[in-house]
Amino acid sequence: MSSFTEINNKIIESTIEIFTGMVMMEVSVAGEPLLEMAALKQSITGMVGLAGIHRGVLAVHFPKQVALDVTGSFLGMEVEEINADVQDAIGEIANMLGGNLKTILSDRGKDIQLSLPSTISGDEYSFTSHADVDQVILPFQAPAGVFYVEVELER
Amino acid sequence: MAKNVLLVDDSSTMRKIISRSLRQAGLDFGEIYEAGDGQEALVMLEKEAIDIVLSDINMPNMNGIEFLREKNNRPGIKDIPVFMISTETGDDIIGEAKSLGAIGALKKPFTPDKVNEVLGPLM
Image 1 (tube, each protein chain N blue to C red):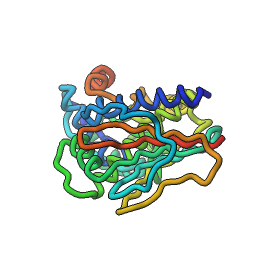
Image 2: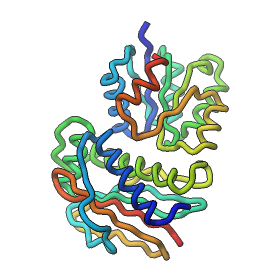
Image 3: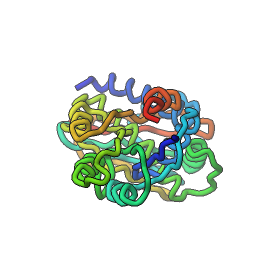
């Protein structure tokens, strides 16, 4: 397994690659990784779970306006509210990042299983882990605001 | 003659993106059909004149590996080529897909240029 610093760097590369190549949006790192995620307000989170030789979760947290902008750019259409298209697009971003994380952790494939992506959204919610995990929260700047990529891996 | 394509992915976003990438890559194809999982894909293959399938692996109900296995048991459709497009690119998963007849694999994320390079010769 790569060190957690290496994982951070590769997740940054993957995020920029996905946004540039598929979402058709330029994003950049927006400062140092966070130690803790504050309560999310008017946001949507996409996530995938990892099971097998590494267990954990990869999540992407988007404030509503950023999610609408990202989905609009991804699908090439105007989006005005959090709907099925936004949930699907944000879930798919988490899915692609989860796939890349899986490849970073193991290039084999079957020794780590990836869950299907899911999303949660709401006026205010918290995203916290109850397990003993290594965790990183990477902030990224998109044109409409900052979003976060979070990785939690059980020790 | 332009080939009819079946896109199999549980994400409607991804089906739209693949469809857009095929157009942006300037590839010559006929109709594009869509299915949300392997079960829907089998129904579509039995019903429509499809020449090539572009399929995800990680899907609900029937995943891409199960889809390949089931398709191989159906004489009328077993020879239709399937190309995998997935975040799943581990050696043993792609190896299993190829052992079941998949003709290649493309990793998500991808660019229209990559789509052209990889899928162009198949169209």
